[in-house]
Image (cartoon, rainbow, N blue to C red; front, top):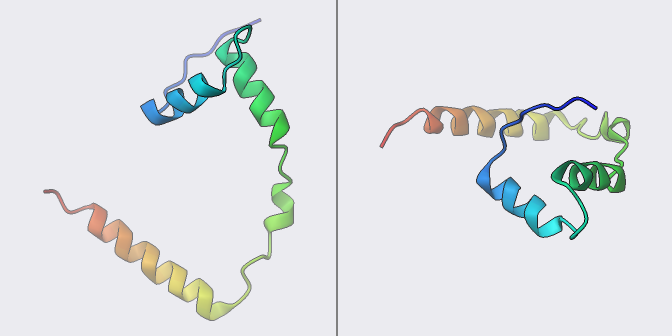
Length: 72
Protein backbone atom coordinates (compact mmCIF):
# COMPACT_ATOMS: atom_id res chain seq x y z
CA UNK A 1 0.00 0.00 0.00
CA UNK A 2 1.44 3.38 -1.03
CA UNK A 3 1.00 6.64 0.80
CA UNK A 4 0.44 10.19 -0.41
CA UNK A 5 0.81 13.44 1.46
CA UNK A 6 -2.06 15.87 0.92
CA UNK A 7 -2.81 19.35 2.22
CA UNK A 8 -6.24 20.10 3.64
CA UNK A 9 -7.70 23.10 5.42
CA UNK A 10 -7.81 23.02 9.20
CA UNK A 11 -11.60 23.08 9.01
CA UNK A 12 -11.62 19.94 6.84
CA UNK A 13 -9.22 18.21 9.23
CA UNK A 14 -11.60 18.97 12.11
CA UNK A 15 -14.54 17.53 10.16
CA UNK A 16 -12.57 14.36 9.42
CA UNK A 17 -11.44 14.13 13.03
CA UNK A 18 -15.03 14.38 14.27
CA UNK A 19 -16.14 11.78 11.72
CA UNK A 20 -13.37 9.35 12.66
CA UNK A 21 -14.41 6.24 14.56
CA UNK A 22 -12.12 4.91 17.27
CA UNK A 23 -10.68 2.08 15.16
CA UNK A 24 -10.36 4.07 11.91
CA UNK A 25 -7.40 5.75 10.27
CA UNK A 26 -7.95 9.02 8.43
CA UNK A 27 -7.65 7.06 5.17
CA UNK A 28 -10.48 4.82 6.38
CA UNK A 29 -12.63 7.86 7.19
CA UNK A 30 -12.05 9.45 3.80
CA UNK A 31 -12.78 6.18 2.01
CA UNK A 32 -15.95 5.55 4.04
CA UNK A 33 -17.27 9.07 3.48
CA UNK A 34 -16.47 8.96 -0.23
CA UNK A 35 -18.37 5.69 -0.61
CA UNK A 36 -21.32 6.95 1.45
CA UNK A 37 -21.57 10.07 -0.68
CA UNK A 38 -21.47 8.19 -3.97
CA UNK A 39 -22.83 11.02 -6.09
CA UNK A 40 -23.56 10.66 -9.77
CA UNK A 41 -22.20 13.97 -11.05
CA UNK A 42 -23.53 13.21 -14.52
CA UNK A 43 -27.03 13.83 -13.16
CA UNK A 44 -26.14 17.52 -12.75
CA UNK A 45 -25.14 18.15 -16.37
CA UNK A 46 -27.60 20.41 -18.14
CA UNK A 47 -29.09 21.53 -14.85
CA UNK A 48 -28.61 25.20 -15.67
CA UNK A 49 -30.01 25.92 -19.10
CA UNK A 50 -31.60 29.31 -18.46
CA UNK A 51 -29.38 31.91 -20.19
CA UNK A 52 -30.46 34.72 -17.84
CA UNK A 53 -29.52 32.68 -14.78
CA UNK A 54 -26.19 31.64 -16.31
CA UNK A 55 -25.38 35.24 -17.27
CA UNK A 56 -26.21 36.41 -13.75
CA UNK A 57 -24.01 33.71 -12.21
CA UNK A 58 -21.14 34.62 -14.53
CA UNK A 59 -21.49 38.33 -13.71
CA UNK A 60 -21.56 37.65 -9.95
CA UNK A 61 -18.59 35.27 -10.20
CA UNK A 62 -16.51 37.89 -12.02
CA UNK A 63 -17.42 40.50 -9.41
CA UNK A 64 -16.44 38.16 -6.56
CA UNK A 65 -13.11 37.36 -8.25
CA UNK A 66 -12.35 41.05 -8.72
CA UNK A 67 -13.22 41.83 -5.11
CA UNK A 68 -11.04 38.99 -3.88
CA UNK A 69 -8.03 40.61 -5.53
CA UNK A 70 -8.33 43.64 -3.24
CA UNK A 71 -5.86 43.50 -0.36
CA UNK A 72 -6.73 44.98 3.00
